[in-house]
Length: 318
Image (cartoon, rainbow, N blue to C red):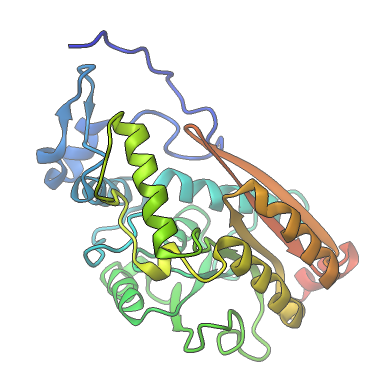
């Protein structure tokens, strides 16, 4: 048995309003979600934890977190689909809320009339779940994967508070992000996106093997994804850089339909090309918001085509 570690009381890198700043209370989570209990063990430091290399354990932890903190009675996803880390997803939502407050006289806007667009909602539907629970926002979630949307729809239908708050739409043209989704005269306050990270399946596999080797401190030959993920969720041609730059270019056409656009940017090296394209399309304001979960640093890049007076006018029309 190794010497018990001293853990900080709070994960100070997470957003101050994030419900997951404290260490997981597994006794509490198991009480509300007994199915989690078989996965909870004492680790080598004699702390209660789960095996984060076990996809089933991670999935059950998410189920428990969503039930306890966000009142989600049913949450499930098909096998091998992405199981998102809930604290990181919550951070995105809270930082976006802060961004929107700058347009609403310093007050975070709440309620159904704050309509959000989630590009790549996935089978898990987690961003709309958290956004609705925390701020009452309504969402349109899009995806190119029929099976993922079927899964997200089951989650919405099984939780009464989500009905009429979350609408799901299939993007039938994988080369388009907004066309075929945003309807005429439809207006969104914010667009969020967690883009595919890798540029190929081979790259995704290689990075996963390296990550597992570093975590386990030994050679790993099989890339078991503890957080799952289908090809469409993990990679696309050109990777994150290509996806986000395409998104920026296409967003110009829908400048009047959305007050703010945003996307996660995991690789800092992609920022240079992202900023260049934002300048090329004439974005009026660009915001870069840093986020940190554990040892991982990422950021949100947000942009708008509206000047400050136009933002006020846009909000007044709401």
